[in-house]
Length: 443
Image (cartoon, rainbow, N blue to C red; front, side, top):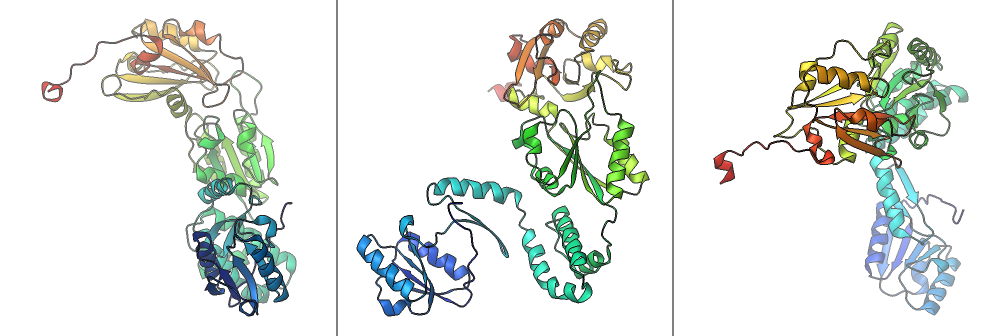
């Protein structure tokens, strides 16, 4: 490590700040926020440093800075010379403040702006409400020692405390929460959370999804979930692949249900991680029913669906006033692996509908033939996209009558989504007759 991170207790202690620059004023504010008795001056003399815990100075003159350092050290104070890290005993890092939770970030003075960007990333996933949980922990610690004399029991309490804090960080803890956590025996039933991993890009996960990954003890993930998404989980979490791939070797849904229930019964915090949104073609109902039947608490965190990922990647709205009044999601295969037999073909043929076809590789030819037979315009634009939102994303476009031939060119094994409808006309060079504006608007 370039520096050893320490947290300096300054409550009621003397801090000396020399200088009136913006940097000096900012550091004086930080010292005051930490409870220090701050003394500010434009000039310094050795007696000013007596009894100080820290001295901060903005001194351009190198020799004068060295004299101040010697005087501060003689008084027992550590020193920070602004913008001269080679002369500093301590430096001020970038701070994420959820007091009493405080996160310090240091780049050893090399890249302050990078440190600020790191702070922004951390702040985006660190709920403000955690502050109240940390304050409660501080207040409850003496009471806990009276209630639980055994160290291992207290540690188990704090583990349950952390899980509860992350499950509802913005709900202020109550005294009843303390009693409930004390009464909960170690190893009691855990819980399951269905989490949408989005279409692939890890930066498209919701903040709530990231928090769930960082509190899980076990993650059951589908084969569409990439390694970059799993990297966002806590390091200690077990990662168990339970992928289901259409028309290929799969983990049975009944097995997944059983694994989830067994892990939760053993006390694990289980995240069932699914590509896209867990509530769209993710067999969520079967997993929810299995958990409820076993008395396991279960919740769901939505994710960005494949349709939304495709739309954003192509900069193509799925709805347009002139071309699409509604959107429909269809699966390319049913439970038997074949094209579902109950598709509403009138809706598919409707020129005012955008159809998003999920998992269509093996059945696309049958889908196109049936759609043409049922009246869809053969010139309807169709776009197929593989690995949407990922670096290796690729798409092809054609009319619906021809799209099957182009899909065959997409990488084998990549997840494919097909969008059919006149909103895609710009991507295939097809045009449709524009609807005239009302005269009042045209004028």
